[in-house]
Image 1 (spheres, one colour):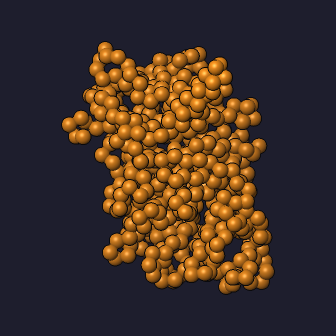
Image 2 (cartoon, rainbow, N blue to C red):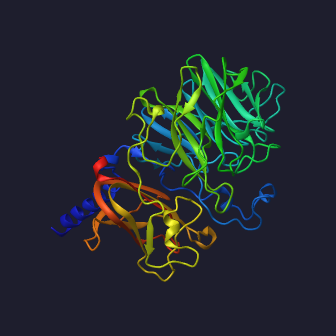
Image 3 (cartoon, rainbow, N blue to C red):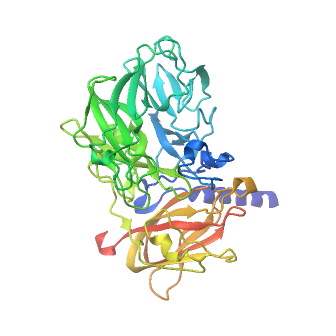
Length: 503
């Protein structure tokens, strides 16, 4: 009897843990940016004893630990989204409301940045920044090395391939990459894809006559631009060569496009550029990524967004629908940080994919059980990723209370956790945060549970939870547990709601 009771308890706990990640309520089958991917890895530069000389212009001395994912290359394969981002491959989702991390072989190639995977001839080919070519029979590997790509003269170019992209079209495999601010492309041999069939052709170059391509937070420097993140996709008889600029360090990081009639051009600069740009909101930037055809023939842009607290490469991944207009131009709906319908829900998400649920907690009133000097509660609701609320170290039960100033129906929350003291050398590593979110309908009323993640075991640096709509005047975040040694704070706490009469 005792064993049966124990087994029942374990089953109940497992079901409870699983239910924590099941979306419910009016925001079921939605997502929000940045994407809430589990187990965000430590950035590549935190794994090294010091920055390389090329990084000294951004940061000197020891690199502060930070987490990053960026530069996603994505396949929609047999009903599964398979994402290969920089730093840690790969992530898989079937419904787009939850993801699982899969460690594949090899998990990193080259310098760990800008992986690209293409399905070609029933097999899956992989390369990345400064990497050789790999192949596998399954999109999750294991991938076997084929060797570096070589020129017509037999010279290996793996030490020169920057931000590459593999593209399969009509039985041929193409390779695109960047060389000194220019996009080049080549066709690989059918018999041996490590050999070029034709010499690389220059396809496009940075255009600083276009204001959005100029470097800087205000596109203020017309002398330079970092053209990167090449991607190719086909729609009908037209080929779209996309790229990003002016650089991954900038909130002006945006997506542009060229169009052509063949995989190697010639290409024409699209009039309606940039295609996708987002300079405001909690996490700005819509840079290096990919465009993928998903369910119901819809198009989706996976992009890189910019945090940059501790390092220029502290980045996140976002997603936005895109479309092709009647003139054949690639376009997108204005990008904002609102809950969106998951791919497959709407027939035409490119015409507007946001739900009617809006942030109702931004710059309202915040109070905390304690605050470190200069890390006040208001920073948790300022709609900005580079500030955060930090409770005192001696605060054993940190709480953050938000007064919404009016009663709203609230159906979801997004929490961006802050981890200012990560130090893998000292054994202070990221992990799951345990917490609860309570709501109060009126002043003096009881505090009732909206989200109970007090038994959470999933590491979610970005945590998005949906639930049945509750009438909330105030919300309270109670942090009940954090990874050993980690001083958990809150970079952003966002409640998504609407006025009751609008439902």
